[in-house]
Length: 151
View 1 (cartoon, rainbow, N blue to C red):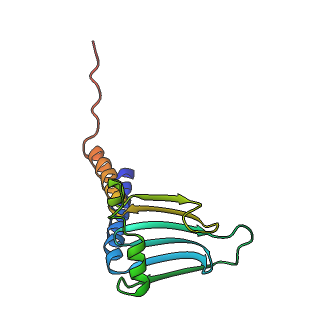
View 2 (cartoon, rainbow, N blue to C red):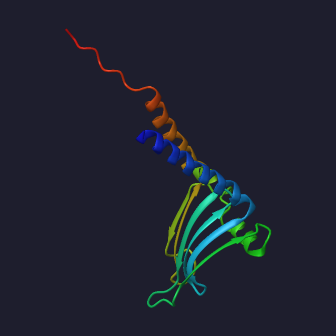
View 3 (cartoon, rainbow, N blue to C red):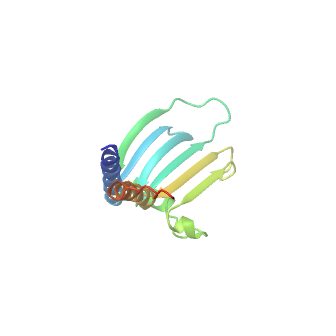
């Protein structure tokens, strides 16, 4: 019974991921903790990607930051900027063109900007979830048989 609950939970998470994946092409979701003056942390859902982005241009004390959440139309000015910022199709590595991207830099911009960017495509955790659910379901339907006793 426990394996059935696990399988249902994994399929439910998979359905949520699929919904977010499809929705990421219609509207860009953004969860942010930032002060719009040089420091911030964002989690964005853009064109089939989940992107974690952190930037900090302060050496010392930082201004207060606020939480924000919203959705942007891909055709809006900010939506076009996000689309351009997180377009990895021209990246030099094949895994970046698949949606996997990592950047860590202290010298990306002039000054003291520290940038961290991690991107994974929605299809990757979706495949992992489907695989886990399939393995659990298969093991439930086909339990291991006891090894025969050697005489």
